[in-house]
Image (cartoon, rainbow, N blue to C red; front, top):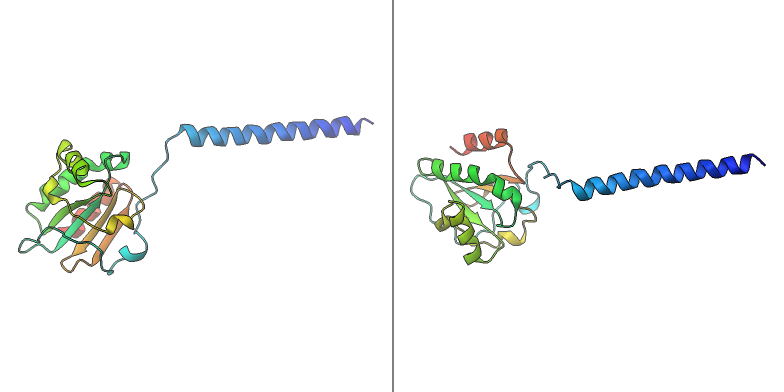
Length: 170
């Protein structure tokens, strides 16, 4: 007789422990902001050496050997955190062998206003069908003169990744 109440107590305690663990997991996921995935090469058509589906990229000035395409959105908080790096890219591009082009899935007027508001050059905006294949912002794609992918990154870049990228495109 004593074993049935004891078994019931064990089941009740086990049930409570499982419920507490599940509640803690749900609360953690709901209350804490999502962590960005580490930057990695974008799969599929943006792998190294593949042709990019970009159209209407700004003309490449003489001596320029690559383009850094920044896919971003005005509603992406990781994109906003990367703006100081994008401003730095623009400054370096003025005296280096690459250019910067911005692409967004947003309407052109909205996105151009967002670029201006943040000090980025809206004339560097590229129209592209690329955004239909990009599932995350920010995404950076480094292209050669033939618009072949040299490097691609999805998600915000760490400081060391930014330095590595700059070293590879200078």
